[in-house]
Length: 483
Image 1 (spheres, helix red, strand yellow):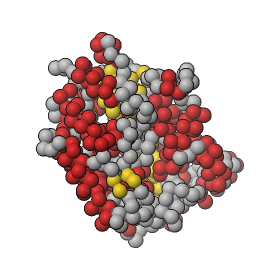
Image 2 (cartoon, one colour):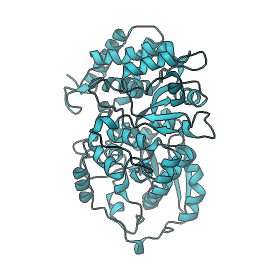
Image 3 (cartoon, helix red, strand yellow):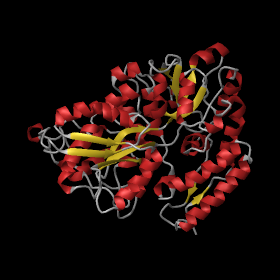
């Protein structure tokens, strides 16, 4: 179990990893510039929030003892299991009760939209995807949290908002309701149980035996897949099913790392035009089609579980995957290849920077929640997003952290050496610009249908991309984003 330093040589010789603790705090903060949040901007933003360590004397951890808090969050990704495990400790330290409801992603999204439009919310806390910040927070569905954060009687002195990864803050926390942009100083959510991007995973033992090097370009990835493919082990794998991450991870990662630009124009204007049928868009899909002979037989039906299970049992040699989902590969109790697996930055075309999509979750207090329980909800929210909770989630379930301190924790990095690479991937990640409009999942759903059809042989890459382009333009026109 290891991480890959192969990209150090591209940074003028300066190592990106330090011994023992991996990626240091300064590097991670500075590299948040990939999301438009330099260290200077971040510092200014924090000053604007007027957030400082709360005075310990005014904070009573059991101020809301006896209050029951209900949280709505995603099920099946490990987040709910981590929170459920933490309930006894939460109740002992706060005196409050915590009830968890965790439907699968689709029902969760549908239920969240229904709740924010209702007269009242049955939940005091709701976890939401960063992709949906614009739609949920932008609709006025969540309480502004600045007043709680600034109050030393309501926020634990060691909670430390500045420790959250800047990319996560930019993704799920800040929002301007007037301009409908992720700007300003108003906070409506806190980075939740994970912030994530995509990472390249490969079996070092297989590459060493074959005399191969880890892929730094997509041509090398394809070549390695062909040479590593045997009757027992697939040379590569990917999310090939009609699944959201077919577009979000496998296609989008390839697309942007060969020079693709997903959208042109302004998401709040009338000129927001897609570039799916560009040469880069077609080439990115063709890469997946070309990889089919070296992937598992039923890869066009593969989602999260199939890939993680296949890799963990030694049946897959390399893949690009969400770091928070693939973390289980490094769990020695569940994976037979934990010690042979290495995490590294994704491949990229020559001259392109290795990077992928930014994903993750926020947690907020619904605007229509019981007003008498909102302060208690904030207490629960800060406990669940504390440093010790985040470290537990990584240690027990290998979720991708959202705190800088977790990614550089010496004990955790020793246990899970992939953490520095996952941290760098988040710092360098790219926001999918369609996430700035309400139709983001409608667009991605159309893309995944057509791309899956291409993967099962129903059409070629050029036809699939043309079909997606046409559908996207129709959706954007109907939504008023394109004339």
